[in-house]
Image (cartoon, rainbow, N blue to C red; front, side):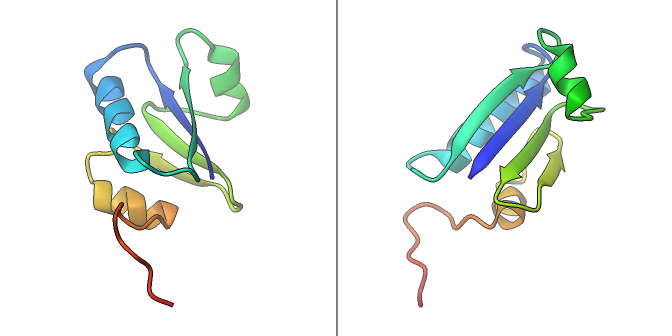
Length: 92
C-alpha cells in the first residue's frame, strides 16, 4: 500500500496527522508512507490536486482514496484504507 500524506510545515494539525499515520502503520510491512510538505514542494501538491492539508492519499491499491484532516478518527481511517487493527487476525 502506498500512502502519501500532504502537510503544511509543522502546524499542529500536520504534526498530529503524521503521528496518527505512524500509529496506524506501526508494525505493518504493507504500508509505504511518504510525507510531503506542500510549503516546501508546492509543485507536487499542485500536480496531485491537493487543495487542503493535511490530506492522506492512498495511491496503491487502486482506486485512490483521500482522507482530509488530522486523522484523529483512527477507526475511520483504517476502515477507508481497508486496514485491520494491529494484532488482529483476519478469519478466513
